[in-house]
Length: 245
Length: 244
Image 1 (tube, each protein chain N blue to C red):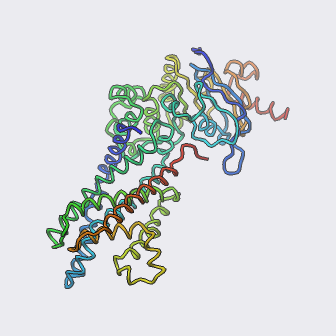
Image 2 (cartoon, rainbow over the protein chains, first blue to last red):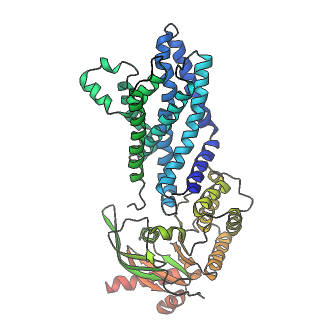
Image 3 (cartoon, rainbow over the protein chains, first blue to last red):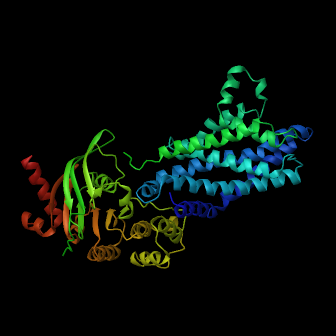
């Protein structure tokens, strides 16, 4: 691995986003619109809005980066640029880290913008500091990116890549405790939720946005997010083959 | 004609490649001399691209040995020394010409001067800031070629680089290929257009996964009595089918 090549890759990914202003606009506008929509939906229940809306600021990057990375990686595979890269002196780690840095930066920008709207305009609170929320947002984005990268290996077309989002993300959203407390779920569902990375991502975000002390569970959450990211990256690296049929 | 420099650039022994359950390359053995422009010619689907992928080291092979510049094909050390241009241009369509070149230049570790040189070589001066997706097919292939030239590779493996180019551009490109060979690089260029055979120093004739003949344009003409290399190739095929 080389710092020069990793940074060149990150720079290249950012150039691609820069030349796609619509994607950039969607990245920033969609979460703001959704958050505002949620604000009006829960107009008469500010506590519910705080409980759901605040963590969502950190979940948007996860979902969006998953989608963007799975498609970006699929395009590399179908355009032939991945094959070219695999014949050049670039390490797989450079490619993964390059994407991680680029999308991590994008996630940070997205988190800042969304949090700004959420906390200043819509009245959300960050009892443990907005910086913690921002950090979790970036961490979640990298996790989403790692999962998206791994999953792109199983798609041959963009149709399929796009459908991985409902397949992989929605069940996790349903079971992570966003819609109903996990303690109130049936036992088998609760067990499954313990094995899903988004459960811990959401738990960390919920702790960061609730006035209660963070607790030791926070450390567990962060470890799981970190560990899952590493596992997903390692699996993703396995799907980047130098030799193909 | 051919500035032969030392050992063979490529040596292949009994290469067997299977793709999609089908045997695409059947125990092929050949060698490619260094410092020459070698043409890999044959009909579409005969295995030229697969052979090139095996040389570059991105092809899963069933059995056989491929030695490139003294090293096993696909070894990390070779990645800097071998330039590969795929049949379909493999560059980023949503970036400009110069952005593409700057990225690949960073990977092989060359600077802006070299980028200007390769743009000059492929005659794309003035198009640096155009988005590759908006270029014509021929211009796109030239960007793809330019990226392979960045690292000044000792071996250039080019899969049908002149497809979609007009005769003037085609002649210019072949001029460039000869210049590169004169400067010491080895070129392996594939085509299914037999006219281009006359531009090559050496010829590898393939058909249906087999190497029919390793020869030169002069020897081929002399042997078959045909001046037109397309007809000469057909004569070779007829002879091969007759003796089979």
